[in-house]
Length: 608
Image (tube, rainbow, N blue to C red; front, top):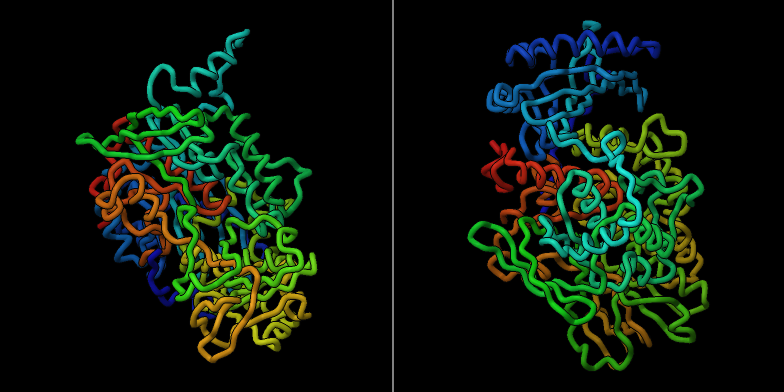
């Protein structure tokens, strides 16, 4: 994972804009219409000076595939000008239509009119969102502008009115068996991994008419959740976690137990008729001169099949399911049990034992809590500081404006409203909610500090989602384990660095020792590149760009777009990111297959 330092972001506060106040009864539709009508006139006339006259000097234009076939954020009118000079005329935007507008004031000193629109380019149909901020002369000017590819012209998703209307009497089962087995030819896309990321992109491809096969090493879909530790429960609320096309039912609990999610994923694959081979393993993949793939798959019965596919998608998680173990000398001396959290099942496995957990983020807290509830002597070893917030105080402040019960937005629109704010602007605003959460959690945090537990507020104080973008972890969204630490039901050690294993536990740099029957590493995962190298070879792995983390524009590195290797893709992220960006990945593959773009490489995208 690679990332860059976040730049300084100046929010469009009323004071900075020279505006004393904004009436709450702003006619948002009128404001948006006047501005948007002028913008459309300039865009369709290719009048770039006119376009820029409607934006503030430090405005942002974020594009996802619609104009650039990339994920780009252009900050400032000089960069927006260069982008428009290069892409506006060639993209031939048209059919602009304002579809909605509303006034928003998330804080007393921040206010804008948010507008939604649709448009077309030469090859696609898009949606967009803009924000207009007030000016000192009583007008409104563009601050953020977002364009997103929704559909390729001539290739709509095969859902809704486009679904099959033909009856099927007695043939469906046999047809599905042949389809799942690819008895009549190889798939266009092979997806390695049948978790939410693999299933999401498989569903997107299916409804774009692209044949895809998911290869899952576990016996059943959902086993990567079903076979994790029994105490595992999602810390994101249900409204944030829906899968595409098939949302959770209205009775679904707010926080989903892992075993329940496992069952839903299995049902999802069956209900959407996704082609999945379980108990199957990719053993080798090679790329030919046409940049297509020959992939060897070993089936459950021991047979192998070499599939020739045009695209290969790795949906194997941020760490490729490769557990990370710190390099600590003396391991051979230790006589107890060593395991990684990925292999842990339940606290009942270690009743009467002393357990020492290395790590202090989500898995460590969940597992330690389970041990404490079963009266197991358990200690968390904290190496670095941890971001802590309670789900009770944090989740409503972070997510309720978009994904919550009775939200004004549908899930799909909420995803786009979220994406329409550039990442670094989002994180600057998040500093405010993060501080408010910390104040609401003050008693808990002070209790943690009193026992020596170290906390922080995320990168530059911007909270847990900023950490998720950069590290994919390193935080704990508290549902009770922090109180157990404070009360001493879970012990804490963080006063010295581990020096080496001993026969009975660990020795630390300060000379102290800890005895433990079980040493558990809740230390996350390594890199997906380990799996890439193992299956595709070191040469391919060396060409793949680093995955995850943010680039200088705030966009995610490599995930959901070009990876550095033609026709090789990463699908990864939490349930929300997978839901949203699986469509982007599928649209790129479909565009390549239909000849709309020549290939997946950087040379076919706009990176100027």
